[in-house]
Length: 160
Image 1 (cartoon, rainbow, N blue to C red):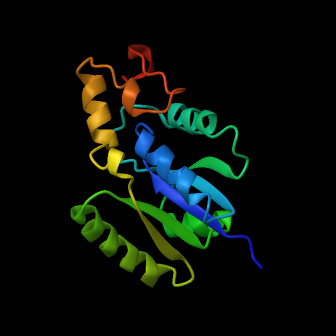
Image 2 (cartoon, helix red, strand yellow):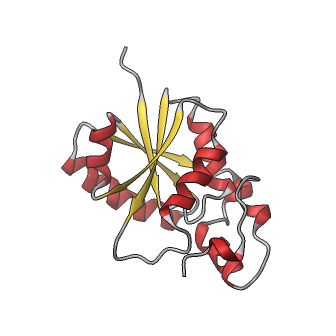
């Protein structure tokens, strides 16, 4: 039986406890998970790709079946590159479902061999997203309760 490899794509700017919980839950389904940090040159990020990669690698350092890699371009092309047959996406709300449904259908047209797999976010993280965490950080608040313990957000870590 072939190894079940999945990509969990996102910007992870920064990784949140919601991402963390979803990835750990997905481990019961997949043999290997590649956390793919999608880099969009049109988008402005709060944290560098190097910082985000380091945070994710440290967060899952005790899980050899989880790796992290940044990528440019289409997620389905990245999946092919790493040998993944699945894309994992988390759903918090019905709006997430509608957005992800469209992307999933386009991905299926582009790469029929890659299946999108949707997991509902745990209820305690349903209102949490990276945008909220970024807003807290930008406004000088303490976001530590929303990110994994090893994610230390200090003013000098922000992209200028």
